[in-house]
Image 1 (spheres, helix red, strand yellow):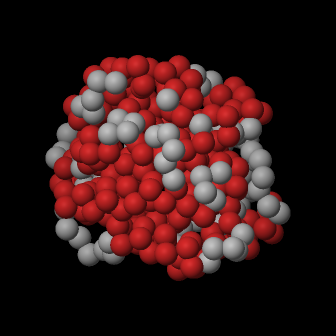
Image 2 (cartoon, rainbow, N blue to C red):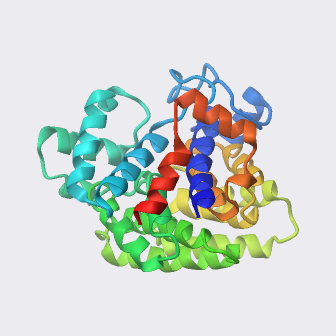
Length: 328
């Protein structure tokens, strides 16, 4: 279990850092600027969102994931009060409101908790993928316990991404990771768990005009199955054309789960296909990486990528993975 937990955390960080240079670019722009991304790279001059980062550096996706990890390790469950305090401290210390990396839902949430306003009201409209990008530790912590993972994922989403799609997407990724860590599980069973979790999340979220995340995950499954026999890259591009790969949770999460399914959970194949599509590439890379890492375990990830991501960002992810498993 520790190897699968470690794989999920490392996979998230690698997908985040490797996708960072491609964020908010089109597939054609990526090809023109980088060729094909197959390793860590410096962001191009035209990459405005992450221009200040270096090759192999992680973004807020990994940083928020580590905050959730610390809450679970300290409290033994998702504790909203502790989470809010840690997010406020992180936002102030790192001047996140002055940065270009956070999404609109997270920005509204951080503004609310810093200014002492009711963050739950601001969170009702949170429909982007910020809840899902940070939720991997909850799936790891409640490995094999689908409903526990879903319940805690919902609690983690409501303060900042409390809309139906925001909560559904967060629950879907937590549920998928909780199941992906089980022995002898198939990618299809992981996808079915994600659909189930998304439906539970939709029941808990605030109703806004938006597509159903659960139905779109189901659609992504069907697209992958209909095009069985094509390459992962070809299927990934179809997912992008039909569903999208943007930061809205009803694009990013079905797309990322579809890439996981198309790649059959193979780490390198999955994240490279996802990040070379562009759009919200760092977050999609992080989600695909966390799913594939949970499914394959750490042995499915290149050793040099693991060493690079931990050294560049001064991370001790094996220790965190061990604590997440042992504290449960």
